[in-house]
Image (cartoon, rainbow, N blue to C red; front, side):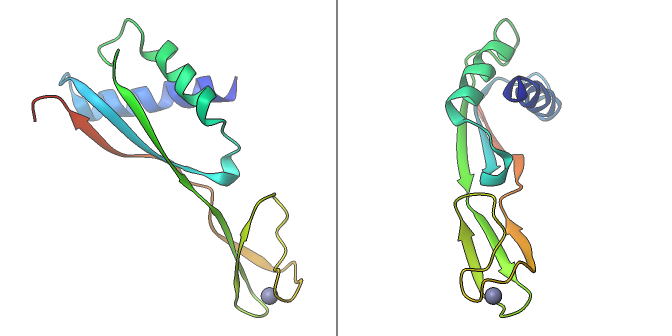
Length: 112
Ligand SMILES: [Zn+2]
């Protein structure tokens, strides 16, 4: 499962930064284009951290919309589906501005 491997890498990153200190909250930026199911991510997180020092740490997900920028007219379009077309001039010549994010933005450590 996609989400399970994501959670494994996240837990490694968190453990590296927490260096044994208890973690209360892990904050993540997840871009729309990652096609991650938030409920599934949360579920997998609980499985991955069970019986580890991260057990009980909650995950807070911030969703980053998918936005493309048009090379022809310069306008930006928020897209709901992965179709990279400018809604202003219908051009397909676009660059992705956001939506590919997937990273830990901050941790809350207990007692810090
Ligand atoms: Zn355009």
